[in-house]
Amino acid sequence: MSITVNLYYTGQNGCAKAFAREMEESGIAGRIRAEKGNLRYDYFVPVNDEETVLLIDSWESQEALDLHHESPMMKELAALREKYDLHMKAERYESVEDESDDRFIRK
Image 1 (spheres, rainbow, N blue to C red):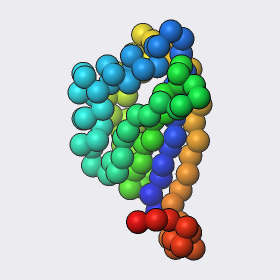
Image 2: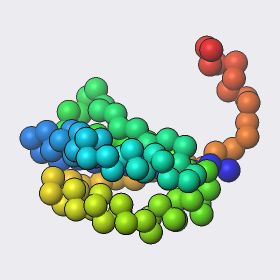
Image 3: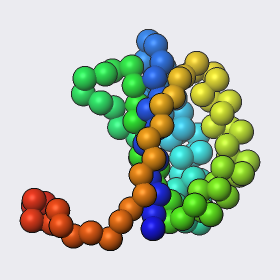
Image 4: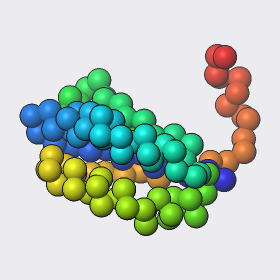
């Protein structure tokens, strides 16, 4: 069972986008992607909210996610969130093996 956490970072005056850019340019995002158990770590901007950035963060297991949360990168990430004065909302999803929606997905 994999775990996906959608994190919505919201700020003012483009701070959420600047945060995501700095995460990428500083290499922190790349180091997170390279962590054992990481399946996805990608930023997106909602079309209807220019002050929010969505992070889709997926992990193979709760253990992998827990190790990530204990990693030194979390301090770097927290410092950047403070720097850009971001507020967060989180949604957590756990995968299930189910192919019932396959008929609706164009491949």
